[in-house]
Every structure is written in C-alpha cells, then in structure tokens.
Length: 70
Image (cartoon, rainbow, N blue to C red; front, side, top):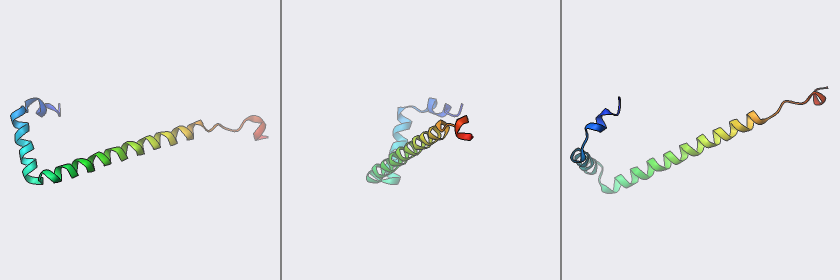
C-alpha cells in the first residue's frame, strides 16, 4: 500500500521531479549526494556483516566438557 504513489507516476512526472532536484541542488551536488549515500549504504552493510559474524562467533563457543568442569 505505501508504494501506490509509484504506480501513478509516469515518465513525465519523473522527469519533472528530476528537473526540480537539479534546480534545487545543482548538477555537481547531485553526484556528491549520490556518492555520500552510496558510502553510507556500504558502511551500513559492512557493519551488519560484522555484527552477524560476531554473533556467530559467540554462539559457536562451546561450554566446557564434563572433564574440564571437575
């Protein structure tokens, strides 16, 4: 349901939105913004992977055997 608006947007509307963004930010700033967003996404994915790996390491630690407890 929240993405119903994209079904109503045609190519003409998307071009108008893109033109407004270019006017507001300028062509050079759009590249900078895109690069910043890309770096943020890559960093987020890397952190999520590291967190999952840390969880796996924690869960694979075994409890001491009966011989080690005595």
